[in-house]
Image (cartoon, rainbow, N blue to C red; front, side, top):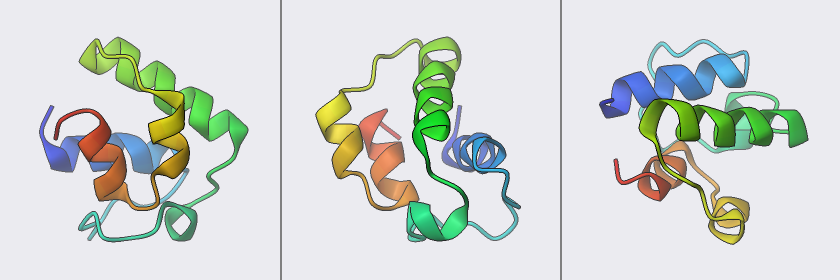
Amino acid sequence: MDKSAFFAAVAEILEADPAGLTGEELISDVGNWDSLSVISFVAMVDSDLDQIVDGEQLKGAKTLNDLAALVGL
């Protein structure tokens, strides 16, 4: 998965339009980043990227690029 596909997957979780996402956007500005979104994100990373996200690192993520960095993108 490349970064643009990753951003599109995150936008889908957040029920947002992926068009024009650069990664610098704050997660909270892109869509509804709530507990259900967090669970969906963790599940997507597990199923699509075969990785486990560290909860403390996830809690510190502020931008889409921060989320991408958590999974090595």
